[in-house]
Length: 271
View: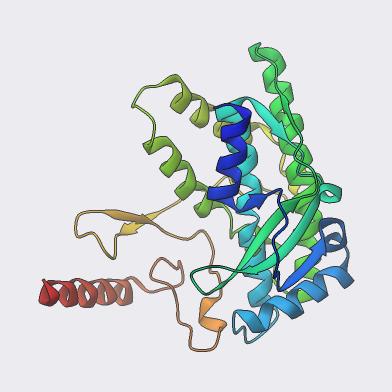
């Protein structure tokens, strides 16, 4: 993957863009989200748009959107051997109305800056840790802790919005590569380094938030497939008209099975 392809992937797949767009519903510099007053403004703007019943809901949804920053960096590191400048001072967070009719969090870079990484394995390992530390310790951690402080949501549950999303996107990216390819192996190896070698203290936690086993559940739509269970409840049931998601870890297995059976039965009638 070259730099042009990387920039395109960040834009089209992860909502990390470098171009301004007219009609943003809300805009705030990334640096201000590390402060409680800035985070309070974001949650106050975002909450009504998603019909949240309390402040923990937009905090959960917004922290889940940090997946886009994380996957942009992981894609850059593993597939392009490059870094991207995702520092708070280079970020602007916007809420834009998606063409699908829902409010979407978009991360706009003030300036696209990307640098090539080292080729030697020893130098690359240190380079990876430096890049991970910069994003998770200097960018995401202050945002997550500010969201927790303002909303009252547990810090752990906010970090918990990310791991299952990472697993989904990584599976999608790996599935697009030939089995046994070097690029596929590097994606897996780099993620393993991220989980095993990056200290939990970078996140301000006693345990690495991504060091957990992601469970699978029977797919709702595919009779023979599986789906990734969410690593934490996203609080959709605390939105107006919301309910527990099919892949929510809080949903009882009998309720999940009943919901799946009803869906598959309904599809069978239609066909």
